[in-house]
Image 1 (tube, rainbow, N blue to C red):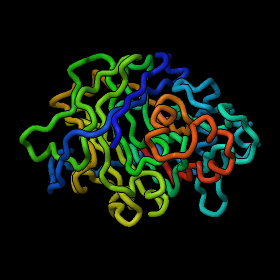
Image 2 (cartoon, helix red, strand yellow; image 1 turned 30 degrees about the vertical axis):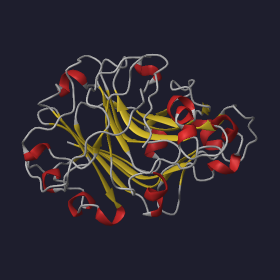
Image 3 (cartoon, rainbow, N blue to C red; image 1 turned 120 degrees about the vertical axis):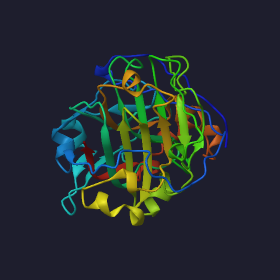
Image 4 (cartoon, rainbow, N blue to C red; image 1 turned 90 degrees about the vertical axis):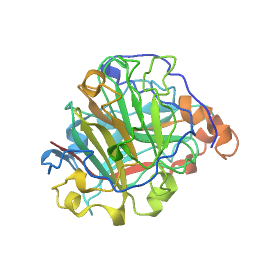
Length: 339
């Protein structure tokens, strides 16, 4: 893996939903073991279930300039619908959020895309996204994340994120109020997880925003590998008393209790990433979060990592290649929030 980082351009208010991102790669490996007791033995119940038109009607379409410096024009609800960039598939009620793949755009120009934000905010719970396709292709930077007001004060949680030809998912926490928020591993088996640690300090600022990332080891967790496996599920368990746990389940491996909408995460396999409350005050660093789904192009991370990603030419040149974005789309079956 190549090591690189990006600097966040500006810290903005929640109205612009700033997201910091990222990141250096490498470091330690956590081995898979049988785990019980990381989370409370509890069956969660649905608080909010977003499907089909809910993403169009109950999420807001962000139309400002991309805070991460991407080559995109984020579209309003009406414009995204009229241009075929946000719609509901009548066959299965899935929601498609796409990057424009037909227009002529100059090298280094901006291509139309979509970024939506949940109208509701949350302070914990089990967050689940089921998708059958995520955006792929050189220059793309798709993500599903949560963020609080006045970034980075209330924190950011990146659940699904990656760039260019990245093979596996990257999960990251960004804390803004405490330099003592870290990811660690004690001798307790309840702290085991399966991913590679990319950075141990979660503390983020506008000029140092790498956060504490974990790289999944499953090649079905991102990009072409995810899409070729018919997608799957990502889950974040945000528990202020125990910490943050994140899972990826390929389509064939989704837990039966989650399919039945009665999830009990304490019975699941070890998560890909775990950030213990023993090394981070969760409620002090993460609060009042809204969910965000977006796809940007190039920008701080995808552009900065382009030359080391095995992609042809330059990121600016790729923007002009409309055919590169035919598969740059989210196909979302649902997003659920359980409590």
